[in-house]
Amino acid sequence: MADELPIHDLLGEPKLTAIVAGFYARVPADPILGPMYPEGDFEAAEQRLRSFVIYRFGGPPTYLQERGHPRLRIRHHPFRLDRAARDRWMQLMMASIDEQQIAPEHREYLERFFGDIATFLINTPG
Image (cartoon, rainbow, N blue to C red; front, top):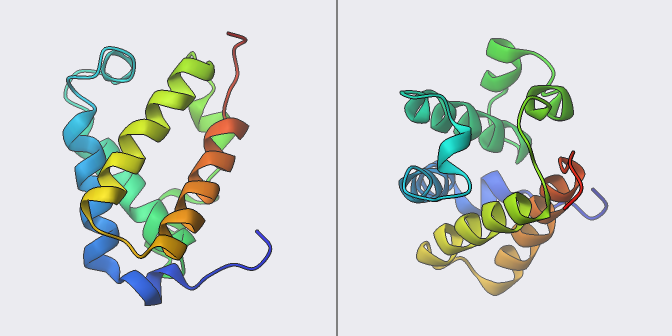
């Protein structure tokens, strides 16, 4: 991504962890996203996203050490990800980011970053 911000340094690992935790606090009850997760997988999914986000934004490469290359499209291929799922994912993620009272310029950066990835992962028309 052009003009990358050092988000890990700017926000810190506790704030990134809180963003992911806030997102996953919303997912189980969500009628669009919740059913996509295998029963009992929320904790592991939260750990994977947290590790990815921390790594991707400049933190320790734990995600790479544990899981290898992100291969996001391949990992998300089994799920029906249409525009509604993408938009809901963004809605829940941005609500979590807003809870953390992120500075507007960092919020905008995160929204653009996550929005680009969420759009890239759409694999079903609709």
